[in-house]
Length: 258
Length: 339
View 1 (spheres, each protein chain N blue to C red):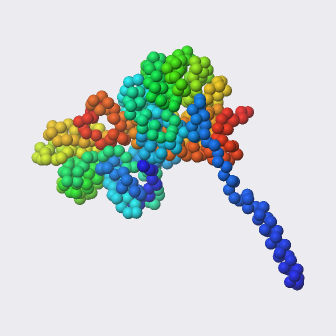
View 2: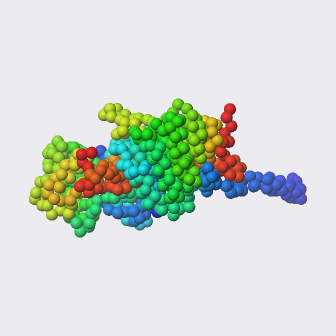
View 3: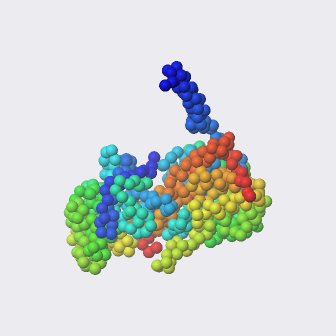
């Protein structure tokens, strides 16, 4: 049986524009962990009817209470409320929900993140214990987050910024092509970020014949697959749902022109 | 100095007095004796163990919330709206949050009536809960075909959606014109056999009682109301509506007073039993609907914030009935005392 849990905030740090939070989540990880890239659905105060889906950056079984790390940016009223919560306060959390990235511990992946899409890839890096490569894109140097964490958990970490203030001057898909030209022995490209980025990364992966999985975003309702609002258009004409069928999809199945 | 005997006497009588006062007080301190309130209700001949139904479109076919609690705890389940053929629904975004409400434009995404009967109904039948199938058609004939299939498959009730605001063909038109609403009702009734037919009314009309009367005249067994109220939200920066379909249906606590008013009006206009809904998220909300004339209530949008909302509504309702000394929750129905 799934449950909603009262989760205590046991760690909170501001990371540039993002908030890094660790939650004590009871047996949530033990009972519902599938793979990195799942999400939690958090109630953000009494005046907002909809919970906010936040991707899990990292999680671990622990006793007596499992730990779930989330990293989020303030985007609106819900995330603003969430960012104002203090250490020791509790949150009403449903999770872990959805299907994440199909990561095998023995695998080696090219992790590609853009902006606030970076956090869930950290779990993928941890799961493959130092074997994967990360390509992280940000608007500028001051928007860069978690780069030290990826440096620690990846064989190689490349940074791109839109304005060239840190690392490569340009978009991540150029770095993806560069990397795959040198080395296409990755089990898959795993990507999370804005839709145009995902589309370009998926195209690059396809050019090199490497499988690609993408984490999609859509305005969500129930978070469990009952209300059917978070529709994602598929190539076969069907509409799947980000919360239950995703958020991670095989890039080949997604209708990128929709 | 008073003598010892006198002092003892005074003390004893003071003690006696305190004891008597205490004995008088104790029963009032104890919680009122719990008299079990009968929570069962009957809607058009269909008896449910409690008056709480989950609203169509907010609960899928039960599988998802069935992972949170035993579906047998519910009175009934209105399954996700069905059409004759599979539909993929509208493009996203399909949801927008509003003050104490949400707008949706799902557009009847569903696997089709045959897939429901083959794959979903057997799942729901594992539970001790009434199963209400919700149907939408493009033509009166489609309603007839679906009713025949569902009656044959053995659902407990059929909810005829004449009011979904998201389907360009049909949908809205049936729910807003009395003669069309009556035509669809007659078609559904004549193909549903002994399965009761409940017609779901649209609030997007000038006078909801006109439609209610037309549907009653056409032989409906029950009414459910309200469906969502048409609304729109615009992103001021992009100047784009949030919903890809531009407009959608409003639900949630924001619509509750409108829904209660409409249930009250309809209850005064027709004799049919009513399933009331619109923003119910507590026992008190549900009691308002019942007092206004509903025999049962549906919980929908509240599930998104709290999957357990239907159970909390059920318990809250029983608590209210108990507090008011009612032997049964059903005694609330129609009990409003208008000025």
